[in-house]
Structure formats: structure tokens, C-alpha cells
Amino acid sequence: MAFGDRKYRQSPRSPLLSQQKHDDFDFSGASFSGAVFNLSTTIVGAGIMALPATLKQLGMVPGLILIVLGAVLTEASINMILRFSRASKALSYSGLVGDAFGGTGRNILQFCIVINNVGTLVVYMIIIGDVLSGTWSDGVHYPGVIEEWFGQQWWMKRFIILLFSTLLVFAPLLSFKRVDSLRYTSALSVGLAVVFVVIIAGVAIVKLANGSIAMPRLLPELVDQASFWKLFTTIPILVTAYICHHNIHPIQNELSDPTQMKSIVRTSIRLCVIVYMATSFFGFLLFGDHTLDDVLANFDADLGIPYSALINDVGHPWDCSKE
Image (tube, rainbow, N blue to C red; front, side):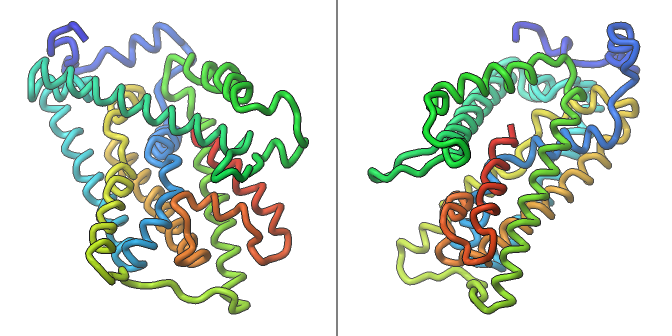
């Protein structure tokens, strides 16, 4: 960004909304619910599948406490961003950072955001390829959902699936001018996350009722120095679980009432905490010490309940929907 910091500041009455009305007479500002869905989708991503494994390392009680603590710190940091954005009249996260740390700080932030977003997209592409077309591990082929449904086909190769996903899904979603245009896909994404929670909770409750699973560990199991240091492998997952700060301003700028942003943040974070805690609790309860780094991988095996294969198929496509 070659503009000075003033380019990122807004006047006391931001002209952004009136410009949007001039460009699109049907748009009168984003709604509260649409902003909640968009922000929630920004927070909840494929990393949710690693949360049950963090409970395996930390134990049930410390793991759930840290998930709640992460939410509290995230809400506090976002409220700080909103407060200082009003003071500096910043229209973007980079503008706020530029006001505090100058052009160099702003450029460093933008570079970090680009690296984060590119890395996230790469992770999503890997997950989509693994889930839809299958993957190989230690010489063993794990079929993808499409292969299980249609058998071996030439068009289910990873390159072709990723190409079609990029052209038919990612490119159209990227073409929208406003974040609010994604409110329906965001609502679908959040809804599918809730569906996954219902599935994993239902399976865990059924198996707990018939006595086929035991209560998981409540505290970490420390047997040696290596097990102690392994606790710190959960930090990257917990730290990145609530990252959404760079999307706060784009969502706020489109609101019909920007003063609602604080309530939107609170609602979104509480929704995400419920989804996170439910997924972590029931995932660890269901698989215990056999919980894998990606809990979806546990659904490749027989769950030991009726319609296990159908539940596995329903659970797998959820991860592809998060983008």
C-alpha cells in the first residue's frame, strides 16, 4: 500500500455507506445476522478439527478452560481495536496499525496477512483434495468421498477436483464486491458446523449410554519431560482458533448501524465458543486417547453404531464447506 496513513482514516461521518448506496441502490447496509454469520465463518475454520486432539494433550478440564480463555482474550482485543479505530478514524486494520506504528508497521502487517491467507488457502486445498479425492499414507490408500460414491473415475483425480473447486467455487465467491454478499454461504457454513457438532455429540452420547466408551482424562498425563514439552504443541491451535481481527473493519464498514459491531463480535464469539467446546468435548469423549490430530480421520473407521458408514459420509464433506 503506497498511500499515507490518512488514506485509511474516515471522516467523522464515514462516506463509505453513501458511496455503496450510489453504486448499488438495493444495498442499504449489512444486517446484524449477516455480519454475525460472516464473522463466525471467519473465526471457525478447518482448525476446529484439531481441537479434540488438544484436549487429548491437555486433558478435558485445562483444554476447555483454555478455549474459553482464548474467547475472552479475543473479545477484549477486538474491543480494543474498535475503540482505537474510532479514535484514529481508521477504516481498516492496516490503517489502524499504520496510525500506531507508521508505514513500516502497516506494510509488515499486510505482508503477514497475505502469508496467513495464502497458507490458509493451501491448507484448505489439501483438505479438499484429501476429503474428496482421497489420500495415501504409508502406502495405504484412503478413498475420498467421491470415490466411495461413484467408484474409480478419471475426473476424481486430485488436480481435476481442485481445478473445478477453484473455478466453480472459489472464483465466484471471490468476485463479490461486498463481504455481505457472502452471508448466505457463511450461514450455510455455520449451519454445517452445527450439524457436525450434532453428529459427533449424538454418536458420543449413544456410545456412552451403551457403555462402549469410558470417561476421558480430566488432566494431562505427564510421565516424562517429552510429554511435558508436548503440551506446548497445542499453543498454535489455540492461538489461531479465534483469528478474525483483520476482517473486523470490512464487516463493520458495511453495517447499516456500525454501533452494532460490538454486539456482533460478542454474539459471534459466543457462538464459536459453543461450537468449539462441543466439538472438543464430544470428540475427545468419543475417541479418547485414540483421537487423531484431525478428528475427521477418526471417522474413516467403524464407529460401532448403526449407520456408521452413512455418518462417516455425512461428517466428511463438512470440512470442505468451510471455505
